[in-house]
Structure formats: C-alpha cells, structure tokens
Image (cartoon, rainbow, N blue to C red; front, side, top):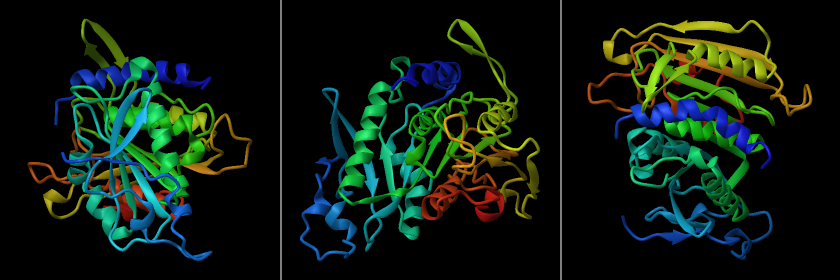
Amino acid sequence: MTTRLGIAATVMRLFAAVIVATSCVGGRSTELPEQAGRATGMRLGARPSATDVCPPEDRPVEVPVGGVTRRAVVRVPDDAVAPLPAVVLVHGFAAQADEFVVSSGVGAQADEAGVMVIAPQGRGDPSGWDVLADFDADDAFLTQLLDSLIDSGCIDRHRVAMGGHSAGSAFAAFFGCAHPDRFNALVLNAGLPPPICVRGTPNLVVTHGVDDPVVPYGGGEQRVGDATVKLDSVPDSVQRWADQAGCAADPAVKVASKGADPGEGGPVTWTRWRGCVGGDGNPAGTRRVSVGLAALAGWSHAWPGSVTESGASSGLDDGCVLIIAARTGAPPVNPADACP
C-alpha cells in the first residue's frame, strides 16, 4: 500500500507516547469458516442463521498470516440472522481482546442490539500494535479476518463501524484511513494521531477525557524514553482532521449538562463539523461525512461507557455510538444526547 509508510510515520509520536505512558490494565481455537454461507444449501433469498455462517464464539478465531497465527474474539448475538452489522473493537496497549469486550460494555450492548463484535488481539508481551513495522502485519491480519467474515455471509460489509482505545485508537485510525470504504464510522478514544486519511475520511467521532493524564487533552511535551515529544491539543488535532476532510469552517457546539447524580458524568462538550466530503481522496460531493469531538469533563484515560473502580461515568457511551453507526450507516448527530 503506497500510503502506508507515510501514514505510519505520522502516527509514530503519539503512539509511542501512549505505549510508554499507559499502564497495563483460553480455550481451544477455531479457523475461520471458508465460504460457509455458500454451502448451507438454503433456498435462494433466505437469510441464514448466524450460527450457520459465523465462527463459534466459545473459542478464539485463528487467522494464519505471514507465518504467524493471529487470534481474534468474535461475539455473535443469540438468534441472530446473517449478514450481521458489526463493530470492530481494538484494545489498548498491554490489554486482552476478550477482557476489553466485557469491560468496555460493548459486548453486552451489541448482544442486545443484534450486532456482532469483532475484537482482534494484538501481539507480543505485553500485547500491542506494531507501528514500528508500519502496521503491515496488523493490517494483513485484520484485512484477512474481515474479508473472511464478509465472504462467508456472516457480516454485512455495508454496516461495519470501528472503534479503538488509546494505542488501539491509533491503529483504528490507521486501518480506517487505509481502508475508508470499509467503515461507516471510526470512534477514536484517548489516542488521536495527526490527520492521516489521504484516501478519504469515514465519519469520525473523537472522544477524550479532559482529565486524561496519559494523553493530555491540552497536549504539551511528554517524555518518551530519553526523548521529549510535543503533542498537539486534542481540539487542534480534530480541527486538522476536519480541515483535511473538507468540512465547513464553523462547527456546531453543544454542551450536555451533568446529571443530578455526581456519578452520571459530564458535562460533555460536543463539537461537530458538517459539510465534509470524505477527504482528499474523494471527489467533492460523493460521500458526505461528519467529524466530531466529545470532550468529557471529569473523565480520565478509560473507554467511555466502561465501569470504573470508582463508579464514575463518562457522560457518554462510545459503545452505543459504535452500534448506532453500524446499524444505521452513520453515528448519531449528537452522541451526548443519543448515548448518555
């Protein structure tokens, strides 16, 4: 991919800072079904049960790529009919895919909404995503995984959204920008790289805790080993994404007030740029998208919607945003209202 090296280079500074600063938060496996949907013998036009065409979720899916076996967690709703809408959920540094599906709350939400969850597992110990190799292996892994699930008839290629947390946000940004036509939306939390979509921008929702001590909302200098890198503020970075996507100059801003219960979280300041045309790689007018930033007051370095030890709430639920995007084709106009 000709743009991959340039994309990865721009991700490098933030990704490295996240890896250094972030603290660490079985069973048998199965190979991907090969053209399972083509061999079920069902009558023409019938929609198969997801259990007939999707991998079983009681063990991780194995994907052989580049001489290495990679693994992913899939979660299929009960009594679902294929092809399914799907969310791709990317964990942060030193985390495990199966644990993140549960702790983020996305797994339970997707079950209720009839949406499949696909959670690729990073590699290494501690596990992560390989920016130093331009994400080549990670890109090949996830591409093969998604293609197999689409070809088998398990998921609907037109109803897929992708979200990532921290270091996983950097990889989600890379993969979403390298393959913009695969996703209805990207939801990037607590790890926004510089704008990197040179082939078109999917709908973009950026969420970030104002009190994040790992990737500071206001940017600034951060130590990475013996070096010091300067991070742009999150609002400045999102503005640059909006500029690259050709959005209108003046965004709409709305503040969702904090609830009466201190545990309800907020306020959430939602800034949304409209009139975007999908980025430098898309002819004007061919694909209208939006770019948005949810600034979460009182929230730290965690997935919005997850349950924290203190019982705090982010005031916004990223899992809800992902599921709406997967099911409807776009994120909600105001996530703070639709997904409190």
